[in-house]
Amino acid sequence: MKDHVHTNIQKEVMRVLADKVAIVTGGASGIGLASAKRLAKEGAKVALLDLNADKVSEAANQIRAEGGEAMGVQVDVSQTKAVQSAIEQVAGAWGDIDVVFANAGVNGRLAPIEDFDPEEWDQTLSINLKGTFLTVKHAIPYMKENGGSMIITSSVNGTRVFSNFGMTAYSASKAGQLAFGKMAALELSNYHIRVNVICPGAFETSIGERTYPNEEQLENIRIPKGKAKMPTDPGKPEEVADVVLFLASDASKHVSGTELFVDGAQTLL
Image 1 (tube, rainbow, N blue to C red):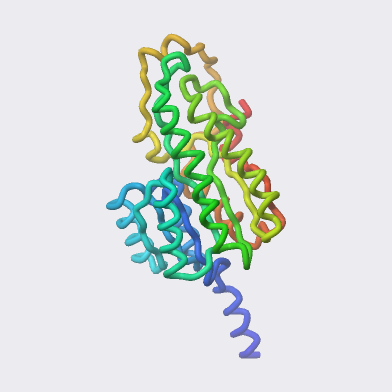
Image 2 (cartoon, rainbow, N blue to C red):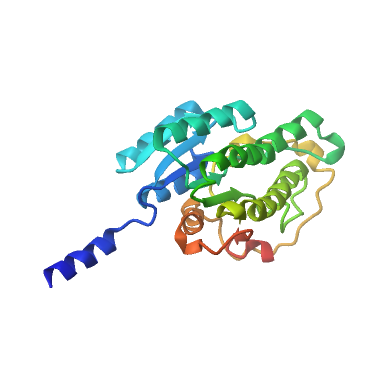
């Protein structure tokens, strides 16, 4: 009887990502940090990759203070060699990689198409779309043998919403991520790597800090919206983290090539 009780207790405390290695880009704040904390709480060793060296170091310290295992790595996800080096660093420290959450992104410049600076267009797509490609590309060699889960943060913008004027670069990058994720899911299925895309709606994050609207120019193209209230308030990053945990775990082992809208039905209005 005692042995049976002891076995049940062990099962209850078994964490779903025990001994797994996870990478989270854009891991210093918002959805990235909330997800990194959630993965670490379930036993994963979590590498946080972020452009801000101080913030990513602080974020890793937060996870360690809560009893998790984490490292912070400063990296510009739009730079090939930097991404490759960061992923090599993680694999060198912890071995093969099991989970990749390609989450880093910016809103970037918001402007009418006519006024959009091509360099600012390139910058947004380079961080959001190229950054996702580079993260996935350089993680594959460390996931091919044992498989795993890749999760990409896209958005409702460019996938289900097209009325946020001035966000053509951002929306194009997010639509590109969705298409890339579906193609990657099929290609990487040979290695038992599943790839899924989450599309958050309005959430309380710090992405607004890297948003640069030209209000005067945008006023020329805005169309007055109705007065209907959104069916839900903005979500919290932790609510996306729960979805990320599901996709990272074996609970989603037969889910790949799928987009999940995480917006409380906001974009159905």
